[in-house]
Image (cartoon, rainbow, N blue to C red; front, side, top):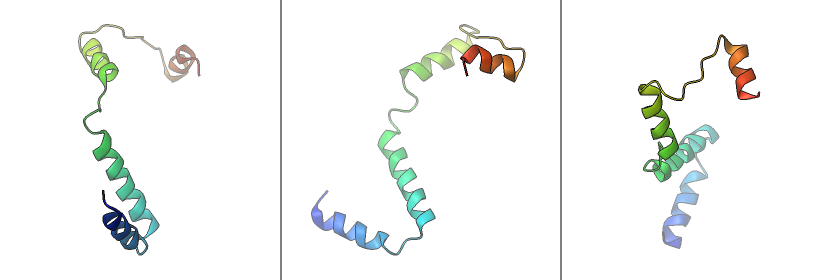
Amino acid sequence: MTTKVKNKILTELKDFPEDKIDSLLDYMYFLKLRNKIPNKTTLQTFKDTDAGKNIIKCKNVDDMFNKLGI
């Protein structure tokens, strides 16, 4: 990105409300990572749970947190 474009963006952002800047940054982060989400681990987890594999059964929320070590 050229310095001219960066400067234009910074100039435009000066008048943006803070919540809009946060939303814009969130969207930029999403665009940056969209091809990496979900990652290999997440995809494997989806496959495993769909197949009923590697599932840790919990009696309740307290049991879940206990098994997670939280």
